[in-house]
Length: 390
Image (cartoon, rainbow, N blue to C red; front, side):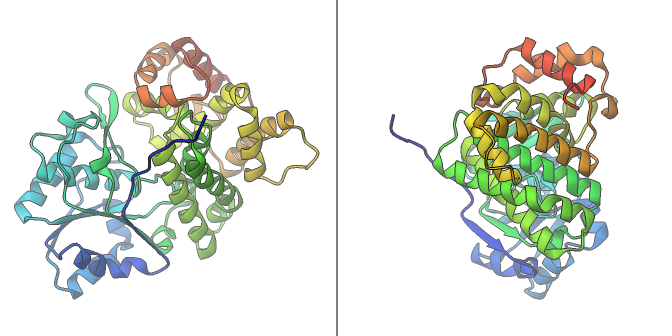
């Protein structure tokens, strides 16, 4: 069968230390202000975003900061941001922060030009008109939101989690400045780094994988495997931070190009039902889902294992594939990632309900390399409570 694929994505990528100070130049390329700046309140408190904001002030570009963002945002937060953007007459939206801030920025941008509320667009390709351009400045190396077509929201009242997904959600510009990530605390660095690794591994084993996504995914796995422990242990190490930002970016591209699998589907109920951060849920579940999927594509697992760590050349394909799972387990333990769902205080009585909700996350379930049923998901959840792999 001939190879076939389609690729869309971010239009412009700017990478390098100090690049955040050139935000005004990027805004000028989009016609100038005014702009709505969606800013993570924690980032605002650390002053990490100040160079970007100062560049707007120096260029006399009118802007308004929206910082009413929670850890796992509700759809209403995007509605509030969009309302402020419309009142301002914003011609662009800037997102500065982790995945939550970037997702709110992306959603607000399309809500400025499309009628209704964020909840009206939860699903695939429901947004009918382009939004105003979005510039994303990630302050963590993990979510990949600066290059994806998804904005994820949690509806706590309904205990549901889902995304606005579609081509109009792709940001216009990704500004990647490793200096913005230097202040990220060790545990958050670890969790979001494992989130990025999950993106790369699920994209590489996705049924929708193709040669371009494979290149990005394998490169991301190699970069993350060699630099995440150093970034966690020595957060001030700019080379490690730079490498992690690049690795997370490549993983995000792979995610956007090939999709993800059962790890993400199973992580959604943990966030919706128990407010567990998405990256942390992915990090805990990753080795258990890898173990389940290994039999479906051992050759690909072997390639991931060799990208992640230096494995002996004499290992067979099966041995290298199994080593991949073992290396992920060892990396998680080294970084202090919880080994079980029990450590996240998730009740085992919710296994059946979580499995049913996870089966409803249709695209990742369809992309998973091994066909999965609700019963399979229940079994994986049980293993994640019992730590059978540990």
